[in-house]
Image 1 (cartoon, rainbow, N blue to C red):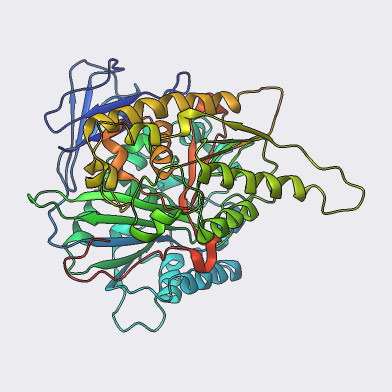
Image 2 (image 1 turned 90 degrees about the vertical axis):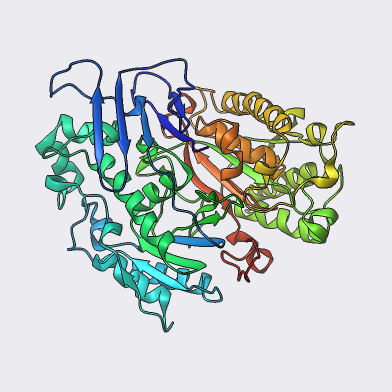
Length: 521
C-alpha cells in the first residue's frame, strides 16, 4: 500500500493532513476543494468537479497524491543527497532558481571540502549531479579522485523560478508584490509566468528517482540544490508539495535515504535515515529556511546501553548507559552548550534521565564560564509519555522476535503496538507544544530526551502524518533532531535536522556503510 501525505496551505488555519492509499480513499474528515492532481514523471492531470475561474487559486493541498509507485529494486540501495556549498548569489541574497550565473564562494568551497572529509571513507558506486556550476563544483570537490565519472542530470537542477531569477529579494517584493508574498507564505499555490514552480518541481523529483533507482549501484551520491533536494526527500517518503520548506536543506547539508527491496516485489520500502547533517552546528543561528525562529524543540535520543551495543535490541529495559552512552550524552550536551535551554523533559528511564542530567549540568555550567557569574537554573521534568518500555514490555508482548534497530524497523512490529505508540506520541507532542507556547517568553528551547521509537513518532506528529509513516524515519542512539517554529507553535514545525550524529565524532555511525550482497543497511 502506497501512502502519500499532503498539507493544506491556508495561512489562516492550522495544517491539515490528507492521506490517500492506492485505492484513492480519503482518510481526512475534511476537504477544502474538489480538485485531484495526479502526478507522474511525465504527465499532470487536473480534474475539477466544480467550475472556477482561471484566477481562482487551486488548493492543491487538498488532494495531491502520486499515481505511480517507485520501481522495484533487487538489492538494498542507499542514496546520499548533498546540497551545494554557499554560492555568490546565496551570499548576496539573490534569487537563483535554475539560473547558472552564480558560483561557489570561498566559504562554499570550504563547506564542500568539509563534506568531502565527512564522506572520504564512504564507498559510492556512482555520483549524480546537477549540471549548474555551483552544484557541479561541489560534486567535483566531494567526489575527489574517484575513478567513476560524475553523471550530469538536468532534472536535478534547482527549482525553475522564471522571472524571479536574478532578483534580490527586496526587488522581488517591489516588482511582484502579492506574487512574491505568495511565494513566501503559500509556495505550493504560487504562480509566475503561467507556471506553478513547486508543483513542477515535485513532478520532476519523481522523474529523478526513476533514473537514480534504475542505475546499477548500491550506494549513490547525489549533489544538487536546496529546493530539489527537499522535493527528492519528500517524494521518496510520500509527502506532497505542501511540505516545501518543512524539511530544511542547508549548504552542503547531507541527507540519507535507504531503499530496501520487499520480498514480494513492488515498490521498495523507503526510510529517511538522516536529514541535513551539516558541516556546521545544526543549532547555530536563529533562522530556519530564511525565517527568524525563537521557538525550538530538540529531540535527543539517550546514549547507548549494554543491550543496544551488544545486539542492537530496541528495548533494553530500564538500564543505565554504558561507557559509550556516557560519551554520547556528554557530546550531545556539549553540542547544545551555546543554546539557552528553557527546560529539559525526559522519560523516567535510567538512560534517558542520565542523558538529561548531563545536558542540564553543561547548561548550568555554561553560564559560569566567566567571572562573578551565577549558575543558571534549568528546569528538569520527567513524563511517562516519553517512556516506551511500558508499551513494548507488556506481559502479553513477545519481545523475543522484535527486530533490531535498523532503518524501517518500526514497520516490522505488531500493528497494535504501533497504534499505542502513535497515540501516546500525540499526547507527548501536544505537551511539548504547550512548553513553547508562553507568549511572554520570546525565546524558548525545550529539550526532550527519550528512546528513538518515541522520537520517530514525534517527528511524524510534527509533520501531521499517521502511524503508517513510523517506518519512514530512523534515529540512532545519541542522535539529535531539531524542530524550529518560525511562526510559533501554532504555525507548524520546520525540521532542521533528523538523526544528526556528527557531534559524536569518532563515536558516530558512518553516513554510509558498505553493504555486501544480501545484507541490509
